Length: 140
Image 1 (cartoon, one colour):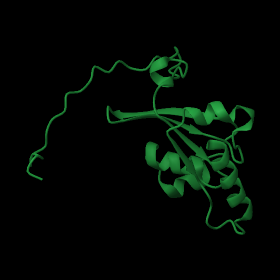
Image 2 (tube, helix red, strand yellow):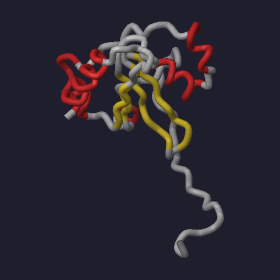
Image 3 (cartoon, rainbow, N blue to C red):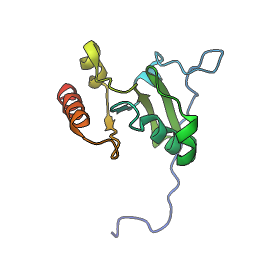
Image 4 (spheres, helix red, strand yellow):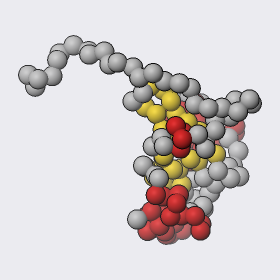
């Protein structure tokens, strides 16, 4: 513990240029700066709460509000989380019951983390557990 300072140490902030965006403000996911960010995938059965979790954690939406303001995800929704140089990644929120398809190898190859969401109130868990096993096997 002697080697650690007891006061906050300021870090030198990197020169951060904003990510390339299109004129309408959409992030260009083909930009190498964005493509090389750590990738977090949100997968799981339909209506399990993947998008709701993302909205509560990253958009400061109240959990109760997600019950009536979040619609079902119809495809892939991607966003860049860029709070600080230490907290920078891309988040990929998939529609329910999507588990990689034919492009699974390429999808999981660049993935840093995988979040599999299950609704604890959606019994029996057979379908969700089988889906989880499928995702893990594809990711390996």
